Image 1 (cartoon, rainbow, N blue to C red):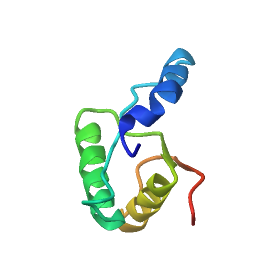
Image 2 (cartoon, rainbow, N blue to C red):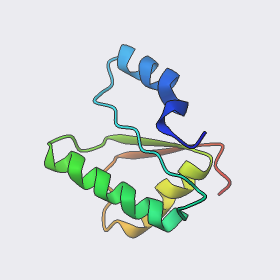
Image 3 (cartoon, rainbow, N blue to C red):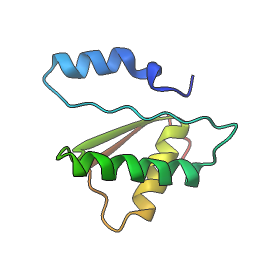
Image 4 (cartoon, helix red, strand yellow):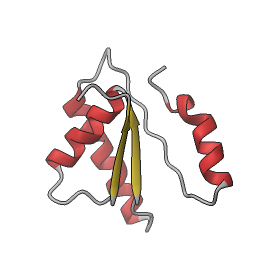
Length: 90
């Protein structure tokens, strides 16, 4: 699906277990490459940090894991303590 709706069940479970706030990030691969998506993700994380909600963990599935890896590679110091990739073709 390549949209935040893919994680609705996981988001519900994480909130139930006391995690939050949870922010979802979506991208369309037909119009966006991995590095461009990583740049957009960097902007989202900067906005979260300005609001006082620095990410502790980030989870990416499939191509989303490559976006996380590209984000970590471009960031001087990735702000999350943990990057989790599920089914990512590293």
